[in-house]
Image (cartoon, rainbow, N blue to C red):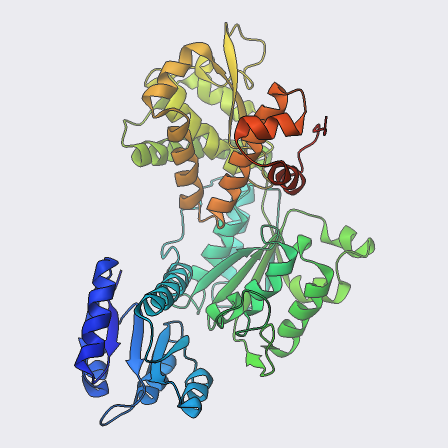
Length: 495
């Protein structure tokens, strides 16, 4: 993380802020005037900038203007005199994150800087993203057609709609389209519209102004602004709420949008790529998707084949995922016997490539030997084989699009699981897999799975009595009622 820059001609203010931030283990770099700070920008940039507004020579507003022009996502906090209202207004008009009025409370100043720091880190992680497109593997004729389409579209900015079943790799193809386009050096921003609550999705897409709604303490850039001059990938577009479809259509039509609570139109120079596993034509007929938006998105359509349509690619993918999983865990790569590989190639995996990747992660953790046989596979896949004692364990819950594997783990393999770090090891493995695949909202997805598993297990022990389950889990009755509703858990009763 980069240091926090403090620009103030008052040495006492610089000293107080430096000491307070040092106690928070935050690195700082101080300047007594704007000229020196601007000179330092030629070699480095801060994570957050804190600047006085009135100093000899150039002012803090001059520095703010420079920062917003060159580094629009970098938070700038302006220090101003309490009575200088005009300066505070000018600071916000210039794009300041927030202002500190002198004399300020040091604890509140640190809290404000921490909020700016969190925003800066969020912006950095979104805008930098994975710089290399994850490898897309496939020799099957159906995949070769996809590769040829990516090549034909390499110099185009045309809107693309990617269709295919969950887990077929739609985001990987979107990243490849971006990487081989004229916008390759600009941001690639991905958003799963189905993973964001409806009341937050508008702000997530278009950003919001300070004070636009309760909790909007600062102005926030939306994904369209973050993707400026680059590519915005909207996954699961078929699940977008109908009223937001109208706003998206307007952006695609005239290239302008408004932040939530904003009155100034923002121009968007963004290539939009969308994806869905749903039948959009049917959703149009059902009145759930705007026909005019459908035609705007369906300029070029790329259909990704399911794994059932490209079985010849399964051995290549398995070897790739086993190497990748072993590298993540720091263990030796396992290999599949010929019979085991043939067995895998014969499976109908509804979760497609993502499910196959999760299965390879399971094999890396659970299979007892370096050479994997059919008998080492999850018993759920090898139904009919003599598995002996067993206990049920799910590797990845059935979240939409996760291609989860619900595998029954033989009792004999529990020692292997324990040696690999127990359920914590499996959680780390699942998180690593999702992160390496470029999935967003990882903490939210895994957190919901974790809470759902705990509550369902407690309800089983209490025969569905949610009040008893709440007591056993150590949470309140209102909390468990709310969680059951949020997570869509069935079978709970009040008594």
